[in-house]
Length: 207
Image (tube, rainbow, N blue to C red; front, side, top):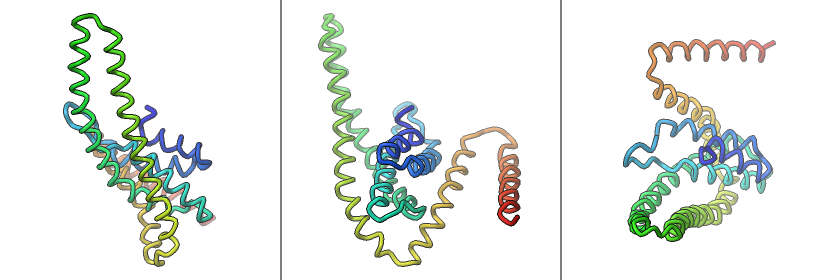
């Protein structure tokens, strides 16, 4: 499960010195795309690329600006989501190109050429690694300096919007997660738990 956003983003966070930001980014993206499952010929958005990019974008930009704020994490997630969809198109092209490797491996299997089968497997893995590596490298080289330059210049209204977005994204993700559960009575139970926790937090905040 290393490829899941809730794992890969905290790993990126540990490498970059901020596992908390990585965990927040990964958990939000995990919830947002939790209902997108690769079944049959359906290829979902690449949430792994989006999570790795969003975590590195938020953390490295925050380190340059002095702090990784909630607003910065929300903006990094919003920027990364379209590139998860772009990575999906790359995944489709890789799958299509791997059909040739598969046919060649099957031909090698018919004559007992196991070395060729092994080589075709490594070629497929190398193709995936290089595609993702190059994509993430290009995204980070271009987007991180741009965000470092433009983020401090954003007006206060945009910062307020990003602050609200930071709290809205988990709620949206929870709604997506609940939608994947087909059990009767789950939504009312969740609402009760949510209200109880909200009331408890409000009580301790006051007293």
